[in-house]
Amino acid sequence: MPVTDPISPRPGVYGHPPAELAEVPEGAVQLSPLLPGGTALEELAPGSLPGLTVLAPPGTLERRHVLALALRALAPGASLTVLAPKDRGGSRLARELSGFGCRLDESAKSHHRIVRTSRPDAPTGLDEAIGEGAPRRDDGLGLWTQPGIFSWNRIDPGTALLIETMPALSGRGADLGCGLGILAHAVLASPKVTALALVDNDRRAVEASRRNVDDPRVTVTWADARDAGAVPERLDFVVMNPPFHDGGAEDRTLGQAFIRRAAAALRPGGTLWLTANTHLPYEATLGEVFKEVTQRAAAHGYKIHEARK
Image 1 (cartoon, rainbow, N blue to C red):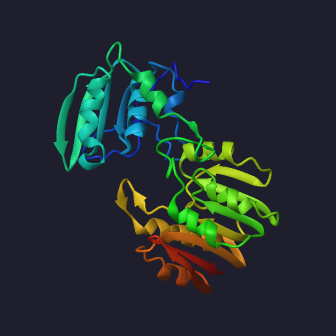
Image 2: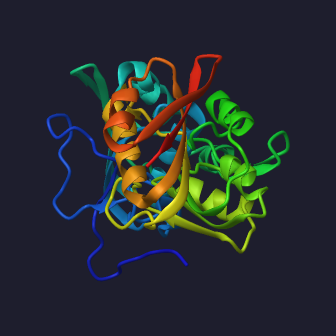
Image 3: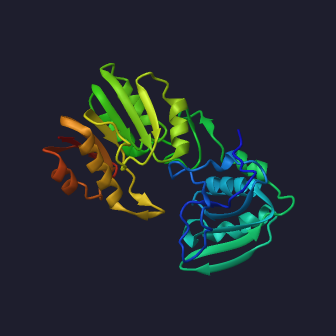
């Protein structure tokens, strides 16, 4: 059912806009699918939001989907502030919002484009943009997916190499940053796997995985895998293709934190199977928290490590 607050409707915020570029009202409702616990923008009742600030995502289909959902959720005349780095969709914001019928006030600061507008009485093209970015079944993948999820319309080469390399696993395990569930399918092909916890911080990926991985051995959780309590303990194995971008910028500490979380979740003797881009320096972190670390494959710009606790 749509989420509404008829007594005291609050403005919304999508993501974490830089504070120096856009002011977010105190108590704003978080609407990003990448922040566990947030409200789903698509579930808000039309015309229910008194204002919204959006850090727009970089992908065209995803961004237009979010902007259209935002305009649908806003009350007529309510304020909308949208910003993004110039090279990650910011240069297209004005054109896209104009296409929905918005009148704009555009500015630039700190390599961002910032567009301030208000919801027109009758915005145009919303249904089309919402449909283009909505969940769909991809015939090529044979899976449910959605623009904005990591590798949403193809199998990531690093994941493919990991699937080719790792042996049949057994016991209780976890897939950290599970995405669409592609890696989970490969793990669950082994009848010796008794339980598999899928964890992802993207609500859309979690919802897709729940549709894609129909297996009684599986649990799927919307959480940041780095957080305490997000991953079961004393596992026999962990598999993962950890993220290494945050807001578009490379952040190697993300993968390092995933490695530490995997080590904390494994029992003594448990095994981590990790895929990563060749240039990422994860070996030092692996060596700190695991007794044995072995590179099992390297191809196409990716490497596979097996690490035993």
